[in-house]
Image (tube, rainbow, N blue to C red; front, top):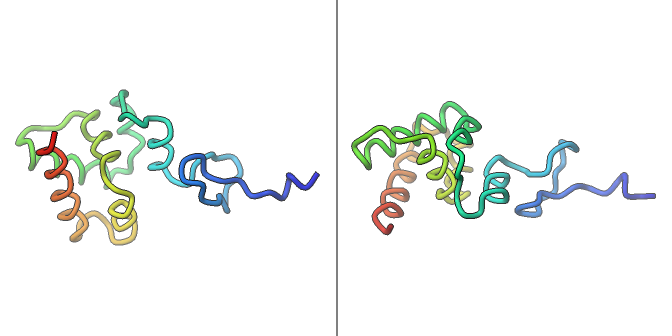
Length: 113
């Protein structure tokens, strides 16, 4: 009976969903992590990213690989980034030192592969 008042939680991280009742995840990042734990296999998932995020990751990957990245590479690079960097990007924007931190992080991850 009191289940109506029970707060819903994110399926991935468990954070309380305060604003919306028709969603299952707190962020797009949590949705991707929950539904694609081994990486994204659908290149069109990159279309779900904001324009700024897509362009920044595309530019970063271009600088690393010296070629135009595919949508699948962009989507999977989003998944590789730690959540604290994505939070900084949301707070400060991509055209700040956050972009440099993401470049360093992705370059290190790609070299380790």
